[in-house]
Amino acid sequence: MAREKVAVALVTQSNGMQERIILCDQDEIRLGRDKGNEFVISEPGVSRVHASLSASRSGVVITDFESLNGTFVNGVRIHGMRDVSSSEEIQIGKVRIVIELASDYEPEEIRSTRARAMTAQMRPIAVSVLVFEISVNDKHEGDSERETTLKDTIQEFDGIIDRQIGEKTVALWMGGDGKNQSLRAIRAFQRIYEKLEVKSGRDLVLRGVISSGTGLQATTGANASGGEMNLIGDPLNIAFALFGCLDMAGETLLFDGRTAEQIQDSVSVCSVEGVSTDTEQLFRLADF
Image (cartoon, rainbow, N blue to C red; front, top):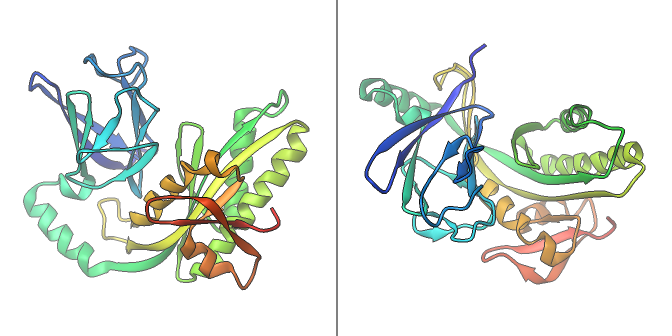
């Protein structure tokens, strides 16, 4: 079965030559000078493995791999991961990349009809985003077994794995009950820790962040595949910003103020002093 096309990346080299990259669901395209990358950029100022583009049905994410000269979106240097919308410009060295999501690169007559249909069918939904990274020093459990453990555990708590970005996993909870979704994201994280700690029998490093907010969902039939299309936006970018604070905070699990507000009457939470993003105070579980 063919994978769904998510977006087109229009790459403009410093000499003006252009190339299109088709991004399908679950693709991860590495960018850089090294010939082992899926897309090679032979330009001054570009690191060997500079960045990656990852795609899923919730959109496209650009990740900078701590490159020396940086990755920029709309002229602003990013640190780590960032969700990218249509027409936003990514700059790596002198190379410019513009993303067009699937619904925006269809022929005009199809796009305008579909856009009207999608606008009519879009509805706001509560979203909780869990981004986590695992490091297990384990000779016995293979990657495939670990992936099964992650998928089964996320599904056990009614979430879905949206994408893998390198060693990081992005999971989503979407619906109409923001409080319950946030609690399920926390329980899923705790259960993953318990399962992997028992299986590994060795030191386990599991770090994660949770953010909550509002996204948009197009109902069945609104997109090209006849399925659902989720626009996550702000909660995803907040989660990425929180993830960049984990080392400084020295915590296993961080979450934003919206999540803390939703769950504080069900679990004990406390603020993390001395560490914050540009827009978010950080919180943690008092007993984890």
